[in-house]
Amino acid sequence: MTASSGTLDQPPQQQVPVWDLPTRLFHWSLVALILCAYVTSEYAEAIGDHFLLIHRLNGLAILVLLTFRVLWGVLGAPTARFSSFVRWPWKALTYASHLLRGRAPHYLGHNPLGAWMVIALLLAVAAQAFLGLFSSDDTGLAAGPLHGLASSDTVQLLTRWHHRLFKWVLLPLMAIHILVNLFYTLIKRDPLIQAMVSGTKPALPYVDAPANLQAANAGRRALGCLVAAIVLVLGTIWVLSGKLV
Image 1 (cartoon, one colour):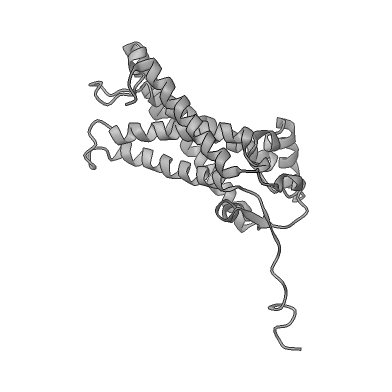
Image 2 (spheres, rainbow, N blue to C red):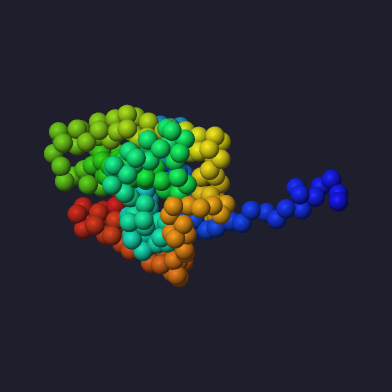
């Protein structure tokens, strides 16, 4: 027997699918778009985008992406469907109690507490992007496509909330989300971040194990959802305002 037997000769731990490719692409695309939204707003003058055109186009892309996620939450793989991970609030409280006592069960997809964090983040980003449709600067040259549908006082109010929501709601939620994922990955050894890259997790006795099946024709379904999202978002804005930016 060699010194390496029992260690190097052991077969690698079996992996099971968790997040399908459309879900992972959505996640990282949203991260990139939120970062781009911040940069194109904070440094608009430095990059020569005086009328915030890039920022406004970025906001439309976020709305399309969020609409896609809603559609994919109905038609996607089981772990991507809202019905598979959004549970009653008391389920989240029960999970939190077990977590504090070190007895939290393993979930292949979102655990009950993490599910509500996901919903809160999606709603906050959606509200931020929606307010941006009505926001405007003092000149009206850097304005969202729907700002003409509201009075000047309402536009000023919505513009203030567009900035406040990012600072006081979205940023804290994103910070909590990142810290919690680091906690699970580094402390609890639950590879949440790695799974959102690879799409797999180690095979364990998950309480939601039946949800690891993948949707049939996922690529075509995802493309259909994306096209529908583009038509819904851009079509609605065009009908209401006659323009997109």
